Image (cartoon, rainbow, N blue to C red; front, top):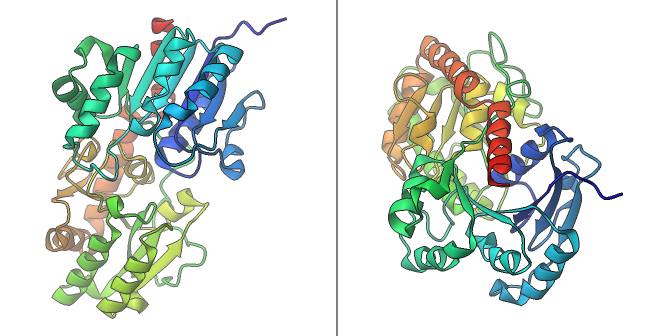
Amino acid sequence: MSDPRPLVMHLVYSFDVGGLENGVVNLINRMPPERFRHMVVALTKCAPAFCARITRADVDFVSLHKPPGQGFKLYPRLFRLFRRHRPAIVHSRNLAALEAVVPARAAGVPVRIHGEHGWEESDPRGTRRKFRLLRRVYQPFVTHYVALSADLQRYLVERVGVPAARVTRICNGVDTARFQPAGGSRAPLSGCPFQEPDQVLIGTVGRLQTVKDQLTLVRAFAHLVAQGLPGSERARLVIAGDGPLRPQVEAEVRATGLGEHIWLAGERKDVPEVMRGLDLFVLPSISEGISNTILEAMASGLPVVATDVGGNGELVVAGETGMLVPASDPAAMADAMMCYAADAALRQKQGGAGRKRVEAEFSLDGMVERYMNLYTRLL
């Protein structure tokens, strides 16, 4: 007997560690199993270790191992895949997976949703004409769009020309049970060399890559220490994550001469524990959609210093839950960090306000409910 539940096929470029991918995991795990079936299709590969994060046993994973170059070579395989499994919804995410809507429509998939989660690394401000034209070309094949931020929503409507009625804004949600404040002082962080209670741990979590711009954070920390203001002598920097920028980050740390004050923690599987082990969270990105790590930090009761790019300003309320600074500006970032390094009461007040904001506006259950309502309405 065939399964009467509609099948949602989530199409991504790669299903591995990342904020976009973690959002798919949360959506599938939290959606009531009686409502929808799910399948994850990666144009490149589904990493087994990451797939294990999905706790439902009825989810299949498909890796297409796409070679470099244009994706139209995959059209026949995608067409056959869609015809074989007959999804009710194909939900592609970001530009790298957008072209799959063409074979989806050809195969008769009734609903093709495309989600814009953030800018490409090669187009961090959304200004490249080529990418805007590509989105226009594929627009007729998309039933409906999901924009994770107001910034991306405006881009789709004003720059790509998508009718406003075909765009729904759904922000990311965060698991407020998994990400919780430490309560009182910060929690001990496994492996961390900074254990003194009077030290102030400033940290970030994210893949080490150009768009995340951890180099500016290292320079900002060096600027903070060099000022010698009260509180700066207690400041320590924690950078959790790994990626192609690591050699440059290591070189920058050596150049500052502050190796004993900076810990490159590498990739961590215990991100909630990392958050609870910090006093202040900093996001130095030069481009963002809606940042999962900002939401996780706020849920963990941390004040947030973030660059004023993309959707960061929709999450961080300047002066209430943190501060916004210009991108690629180490001096401005250092000044903001110094405010918190010197004032424990400010950290506690704004961290608590951030937690309340997440509970009220960015819960994971609220995000899942909005996606379910959209899927049901479009079907």
